[in-house]
Length: 501
Image 1 (cartoon, rainbow, N blue to C red):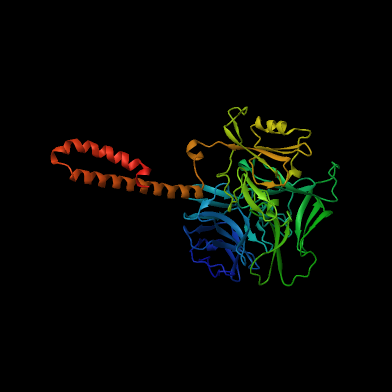
Image 2: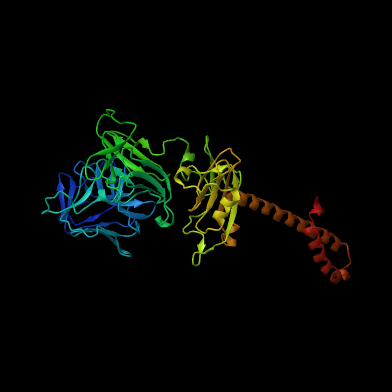
């Protein structure tokens, strides 16, 4: 890749594409481009072989900003930790670009990403800057020459994607950390931090884990909300907004340990639904896990470990399907992602659905659900059956608690108690989709079909040979009489499985 004059490939990032850059709008310090000025333009080369095309570096050479390939063929902008190639921040526009097509990044008081087909994909809205710089903290900022407030008009730290880093403030008004697969989110409330599942494009966000600040006072309406921040010493602190008063500390495994060399820490909303902290040291080959919000080692504690309509058996974390006892790996109990509830028309009617009932079933995160009390099993089921926003109900016969699930059914947890029963709705698919078989059943059916075809063919062949022998034994004057009989014999002989047993 060519990045203007004297810009090298950094920290093992293999660069083979050609990136066109307006070099007059670059400020190069040593061998690194450390500043983008108004008039800057860089064009991504369609189908570039490198997964990352940097256009701007932090002075320490550890972080870079540029074009990132996402998945097999999508394009985004990102700030990347070069030693690990991990994206610490992404622009994540509503519509990603196409890696196989040209894309252009420009800076003229504001950063803008465009492509030739879709126009503007992403931009820094309502901002005016003179230069773009990437700090040694990994914060990408727009800066004004005449602003002495030290508050940049735009900074990536205020627009996190799935990751927080050291000294990055995370508040209740910050965009949530959204996992890369868009299924989970980390948010702050006034006095707590929480993990949520994301359904219907973020319209329904049930909570499955939360932690309340120990020294915060939810009942005090005048107390300011909390904000969070990673400390380089190895903890995530919760503080009262407007100052540095700490109200809780979530210690990492390496809290107050004297780690050698430079240490860089991050906290990421991972694709399995857990919030984890990691650190990287000089010479490391991989990130080291340092903290987990859901601390247990049993994956049944995670909300979707066995997939939709899966049943997780604690201990060995074996996966089953709610409608049978078959072990599954990977989980494939229900195909597709639900994009809407079961309501139809004006919301008073329900679409067609099937019902699955299962005993010995519970919810891993039932503490986050508000149960209805003093219910019978029939009353609990009826409360869900007639509600088009309800997808399932889990009943505890010992306590009389009824947990209504008003979001698509994900992984349930097995409990050896016959008094714990579940009622679950499954959207009824069109008949062509409903008849789809699992891969194992389809393979077995295909083999059986081949056997039957072979048997029928063998029967037909046997019948023909028998007819041929009869034909040769008769006089030619019987030809017209025997031809119809030939087809009669073929039909009877070829269709009878007893004829060659």
